Length: 350
Image 1 (cartoon, rainbow, N blue to C red):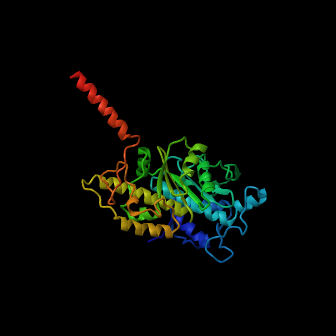
Image 2 (cartoon, rainbow, N blue to C red):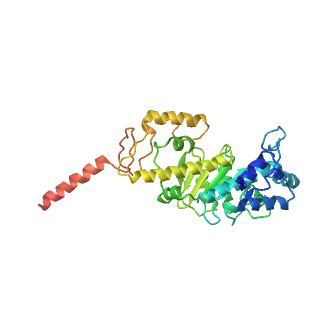
Image 3 (cartoon, rainbow, N blue to C red):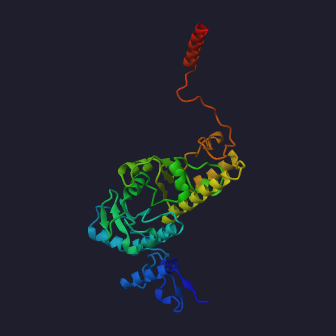
């Protein structure tokens, strides 16, 4: 049987310092792989990515990080360096995965990766995430000004940049519209907690109010949440996630969140109350989460405060005892006085 070569196979080969000439001559090349090969050939490159100076598989960043104030020649050199070329390939790979999983539609979604003090690579506008090429990428400063790249940068870059400015650990951000998670965003609520370990360990979800996509107001509302959350549901819009590890890890947050939201909705239709973690079990998961450096507002809370299922959740109740609180604005003395006056009036009428 003839081997089948995909675009991902080619990217993996290049990341490992391989040569395209080593591909089997009788291999079946997929359409996306053929497009990538044509693009590489147009640049006369048989190796798009070389190994780093330390002998590692992936190129290393500059020893001294550049900034938006660096000379234009240095910024152009960085943009065309093996280091950024590797990141561009990673962005294209994540874009294809988003598109293949139907997490993006049309030209929706965008991706950004920090490559300097206040500069980032990002995806272009008006291009399907499933069919991007490395030369489509853009270099921008943290104010959104484009520094390099022939295509125009994404219109939603300000949100990504505000996340990076607010959260110094954020090295990569991914925004998309996964249907089940976006359903929760449209409803204006985060999914219930205490049901799946992967969700509890790797994702920390909050909801940002709706504002027009691409506006500074939208970016600010999201950025206000990223100190304690790495995955934000954007009301009536979609989801954005940041990672302190890399762009693939930011993408993983999407897979975990979307699978979880789908599972919650399936469980809600089974006619049986879902089983949830005990407070002690959830504490164990949060310890793992904290050891991985993943933020969560529940770090350090007592067991009775861990579950966050107070809003309507289909069939979900927390195993920890819930503290009953008086309704907002309720005044017991005023209510008693009103009731006494009402009783007097009713007595006179009788």
